[in-house]
Length: 174
Image (cartoon, rainbow, N blue to C red; front, side, top):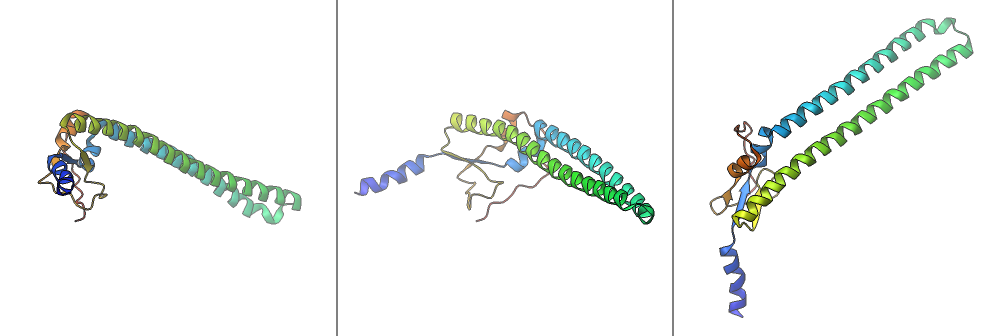
């Protein structure tokens, strides 16, 4: 019985654990910078388009307010319907742009995440690590960095990241 209880302790003592800080790596990846630039360009285009729609809507509303007292009832009703239609198109465009931005962000970050995870897997397998933990996520309540190997530098090398991060490392809760 004592041998069975000691076996897991022996396995744990022989296991290798590693950690890295994605918050230090991500901002320095070329793919991340490219994705951020593309997303900002996309967001500006949506914003510009929405501004044009909003300006058109505002002008038509102001014109309507000036002319409304002198319009025939059927013309006034038609103009009000046009304003309502413009408002609905604006709201739909706003919603569509938000959905498109969210989808584009998810797609771009998924590609980056796949590249990072492939590098983590490669380093984990070649290094013989049992676990590799991203300390920037805060998902781990405790990491003893003295007993864990920090592979952030290896990941940077594997991913071709050369600049040092300006972001400070997230400290996991203890």
